[in-house]
Length: 249
Length: 144
Image 1 (cartoon, each protein chain N blue to C red):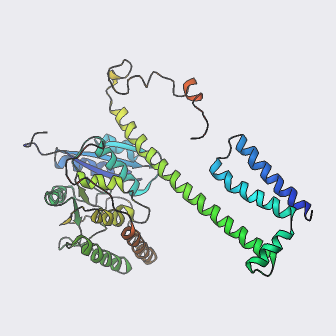
Image 2 (image 1 turned 180 degrees about the vertical axis):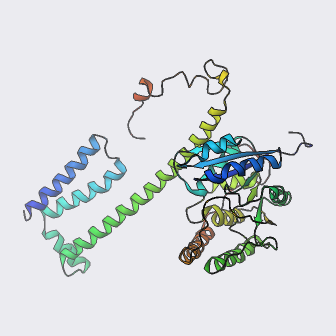
Image 3 (image 1 turned 60 degrees about the vertical axis):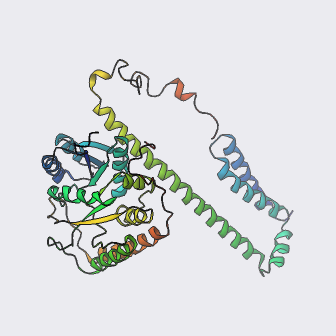
């Protein structure tokens, strides 16, 4: 790869029954920059998510059954590793993440291994309340102190990673309970990945319905604490200290 | 010869486990536990006094309670073991699913011209081979 050409970026989009929004989201990302490749991980959808995504220009990974966001992301990371991508970014299929922010979030990788597009960092008007907010604030405090940097939105799925981050994600399997966000982040930090955050705005979702429900929020709080506890007691991964180690591929 | 019914029951269980093992319907690692239990039951059924002696030795007043607590512990152990095994299997299934998804996307991305002849050096003639053939069937060796 020539140093003058910016490396290609793999945009990983986990999708489970996102037929309503996926086509437009994929097209929007592809239009934003020509160095983005989109891979849609079709997580056992029962609608025509896969066909719409493929028609919009994405590569589609068909998981034969539903594995959840964590499992879908892992498949995406594995694909990135196979094809030798050096930078990946996770973007929601429902259009909540603005493709124009992808470059900003990727820029965070210049001085860190993982870059999070954070929703509360003084931009946008994304708000939550009640137990869900307490959980987020609590998690943000704990993980900030672990990562030794100020993180305000640790559950954001809008995340970029470099090769070290991919290695780490592939080594540590995202577990069920919020594994794709908290668990993977905590283990990554403990394994020596540097984390940073970039403020972004969130948009309203294009399709599907949001989950606003106090009971669900309380369950979310409980699960986060549970996930955090296990993440803290997990074994750390041994990842290469150099960023360009491709021997395991 | 105290309890003939219990003895016969234990005998049937042991025989079933051995038969399943013989027909490869049960792996050794699961069978071992059941064999131990079956043989212990056999011994206890043959010599019911043994239970009283053990109960007195351990300090349990009612010998049947000793039997119950042992069965409960054993069943818990089996359940835990099975949960563990199923977690391993789930992990393996997930890895396979990822692999299949990636391979499928790569196959779909292959240009049509490379398919029938041996155009590519890797994965040359996988399309010309039958998916399940004699080679696969004969592969069914003993446990690994």
